[in-house]
Length: 400
Ligand SMILES: *Cc1c(COP(=O)(O)O)cnc(C)c1O
Image (cartoon, rainbow, N blue to C red; front, side, top):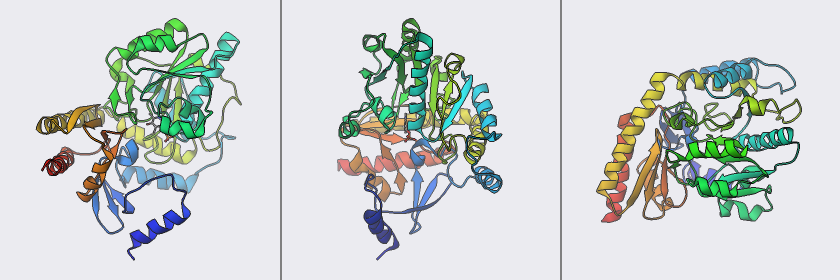
């Protein structure tokens, strides 16, 4: 029996079956390539779902992690350490934020923002405002609070009741958001570019009108940039494209270069309502992940790095638009910003994945009909070309 078959057989036996995976076993990575345990190479257009911004086996990042591991991995939030302070300073100095709370994942960042919003409301109004407004097509995570703000029946229904008080407005429709906002609303949460829901960038005026709505109704505005933040769009934060500033911003996926880490960035309005003991987590902002994140940010926030992401993003979008012209019956739309792009097909996307794997390319889906393209930010144009050429070969075969 092949080693891969044996591993997959044992996985079926011992690991809870929450994931459906293809029939190879990934062993290592280098640059923008992953290798399975039989030596087959895959060009990676997924990057661990928008996590591995610097690709695999990055020299600088590996060195920082190894050196920090020799010093101190964890000592809890009972004690002061320097790494999380340095990281918070970088995040604050390069964003709208005044303070940062560190956690361990995207869902936890959203949960944290929800709790901070309720605390803000309680402090500000002296009464509970437990409600939240989220949007159609949203994805904020799988824990009870984050799931309550996630518009996906399949994820929600088996686990209800979720955190109460969430209402959904149509993504892009600020009037609908206004009608769903009441005196009981503490915050509105939105992804400036929806990921999981199909790679949908907010329209040019939507976020601005939403900020105006929140201002008029005295409600907090939360941006979930877990997927679209940290250089993915060619700016350090996606909100910087839109010129709209939130009260809180959630980060995770690429923050610590593949180590689990999340963060909630908050302004002074929120920060002043928070006291010691209000929220906590054992691992959040630990020395190892913080050191990694400082290195990730040092690299991705360079002007030349972000400019390169914008250039490569435009190139990718352009090439995919040519693909749409060539296969108008198969490709319905191509959209995105920077290296966060979706290709909407006229048919279900998941069955195409195996063909990409056969061609040595990894992609994933976002919703039913969208191929999601979120490669490492260090990808080059030749690799982008290879991906688009593979896509064309697959569609050509589908046609004939
Ligand atoms: C992935 C994602 C989350 C959840 O992050 P986890 O680390 O999987 O909990 C939340 N929001 C957005 C926009 C995401 O893409």
